[in-house]
Length: 639
Ligand SMILES: *[C@@H]1O[C@H](CO)[C@@H](O)[C@H](O)[C@H]1NC(C)=O
Ligand SMILES: *[C@@H]1O[C@H](CO)[C@@H](O)[C@H](O)[C@H]1NC(C)=O
Ligand SMILES: *[C@@H]1O[C@H](CO)[C@@H](O)[C@H](O)[C@H]1NC(C)=O
Ligand SMILES: *[C@@H]1O[C@H](CO)[C@@H](O)[C@H](O)[C@H]1NC(C)=O
Ligand SMILES: *[C@@H]1O[C@H](CO)[C@@H](O)[C@H](O)[C@H]1NC(C)=O
Ligand SMILES: *[C@@H]1O[C@H](CO)[C@@H](O)[C@H](O)[C@H]1NC(C)=O
Ligand SMILES: *[C@@H]1O[C@H](CO)[C@@H](O)[C@H](O)[C@H]1NC(C)=O
Ligand SMILES: *[C@@H]1O[C@H](CO)[C@@H](O)[C@H](O)[C@H]1NC(C)=O
Ligand SMILES: *[C@@H]1O[C@H](CO)[C@@H](O)[C@H](O)[C@H]1NC(C)=O
Ligand SMILES: *[C@@H]1O[C@H](CO)[C@@H](O)[C@H](O)[C@H]1NC(C)=O
Ligand SMILES: *[C@@H]1O[C@H](CO)[C@@H](O)[C@H](O)[C@H]1NC(C)=O
Ligand SMILES: *[C@@H]1O[C@H](CO)[C@@H](O)[C@H](O)[C@H]1NC(C)=O
Image (cartoon, rainbow, N blue to C red):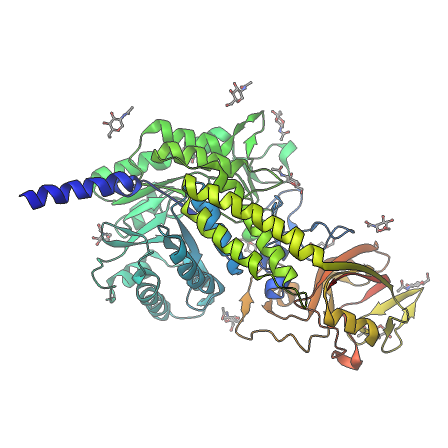
């Protein structure tokens, strides 16, 4: 008896310290993993999406984004596949430093875990999932679940028989049980692994067959519960009629507007208002409450999303929709805050609030800092505190991006021969753990460690490095043609049979090889052919081999048949590519365009190993005129 009382008291204390756990209220953010960078992956991934919103009647339906293009001073990217600009600049979703930053940033504002958009085994999203499983171990408590985007796998299996499709899904489900859901980090609900099921892939018949197949569960686990998106499974009574007896609950997603646009919003087909976003949450809640009390559901999740604009992903081949971040008629009314206020005032039984998304820039839904404004992160901190009745210190929110920037600077200076960044790295590793702990004491410590790191960077590292500028015109004695180029009307003609090859003088090349650098390549180009094509610059890269297993596949939707081949492309992480600029050419007499693109120490090796002993090669399958080529470098060397 005494033992028992003591045990209850013990439980009560645990409950008080881990209040969130006992109330079950948690916040999960959706995470995507398809945007890359040249430095980290050799390509920009979906920052360079191209596509047509095939079902759209908006004023512009065809979008070509070139993540490579920079402002002429190199400071910002000017043509990214997003209508909001990330304050941290372009980042790679596959970069472990960025992934860890996302975990830190999420924890700092009261987010308890991620639901990772996942496709299938060995897909690039699986690579990210494995990495999050490793990284999150350093930041417990932090939960992970998959948001299974079944339509990705289904589209890969388009030509298979229904039984083959079910079998492949079954082996992927078993894989999830054996890996992700065997981890102590996995999200469980009363002993059941939680799988968020996005929908649009399997038919209800196939899904029923999948559920009836035996799986080996992690030790001690009950069968998974399947929580389907409101959008795909609940939005109409017919949908729930079809799916209700297969799923165990639903989750809200980003409300994205269903009103046909008036003439002054012709960029989109549909839009939503702040009131619509709140009504969407009310609809999800009403359904969730009813479903839970009738016993058909075991779990439902509300959501809160900052806004929506899918021009960045050209409506995934369909229509263009818009949910502004602020009320169009009242700029002091925030879409995101209004949804949170609804959740706080409505006192629903939702155990989870889902935030779509943490980082989906192409849909303009990211919670992360955009356009130099921390507002959605700050709102999350405020409303998470109230909803969970747990306070979060704003210093954590502020320190995360500072930590990420310093870490990236440290990695950059580490490429300077003779420079030792160890003490800076130690300071940043310690700061990371202190930020992650998130207590007042640890954040005070983190604040000091970050200040130390800044001081170390300035006083020990930057002061030990000299920066020298080099401007190189083309052609010149430093950068000359390996083969005589074809010149017409004063510009170079490049096409399938006539690339241009540039060779860098060994004296300059060896300076770049032996030091660290940041480089810019500038040129003007004029497409001479009609239709969609690209101009590409390749560099010598003997010393930079890429991982052949790194293969990212992206599909563009709704493009005209004749151009499909060149659009349905596979990007191998090819370190040698400097840029690939797509255009929809208008034929001869088109406008001249300016290009400024970056050249990185990680990628460009200046070892004359490209064809004809060249270092830069301009190529295209179409035909281009190119002029005014020049290079600019800042060389970083130890004093
Ligand atoms: C390319 O431009 C042509 C002519 O302006 C236009 O008809 C076509 O739809 C465009 N194609 C794409 C994929 O943008
Ligand atoms: C953010 O900046 C981009 C340009 O960089 C601009 O087009 C967009 O309207 C801005 N969005 C918001 C929400 O301020
Ligand atoms: C399906 O088959 C068609 C015709 O054989 C082929 O063109 C297409 O690439 C296949 N699709 C997939 C996803 O394998
Ligand atoms: C989840 O739904 C399936 C299908 O309706 C059902 O068999 C299973 O018992 C449900 N799981 C829970 C934990 O209620
Ligand atoms: C569009 O016009 C209506 C009035 O017809 C106005 O209320 C609304 O604010 C306008 N929207 C935008 C985005 O300018
Ligand atoms: C909410 O539900 C009602 C009734 O089903 C529907 O008419 C309305 O369009 C829904 N609103 C939103 C924003 O989803
Ligand atoms: C605009 O929104 C703010 C915040 O919700 C509210 O306090 C204010 O009354 C609104 N203004 C108007 C004119 O509706
Ligand atoms: C909130 O929910 C609890 C439990 O369902 C209920 O007892 C209480 O009356 C509700 N409060 C309000 C303000 O609706
Ligand atoms: C060069 O100029 C001639 C005469 O103006 C013109 O016919 C030809 O198309 C031009 N060539 C290119 C590549 O622009
Ligand atoms: C490439 O351009 C040159 C010069 O205009 C021309 O002679 C050659 O035929 C072109 N090759 C192709 C494949 O278009
Ligand atoms: C565009 O969408 C329509 C309707 O869904 C479809 O029939 C057509 O094949 C699509 N076109 C392309 C090029 O994908
Ligand atoms: C390209 O750059 C030149 C010189 O900097 C400038 O005069 C011109 O307007 C630019 N062209 C475009 C299309 O931006």
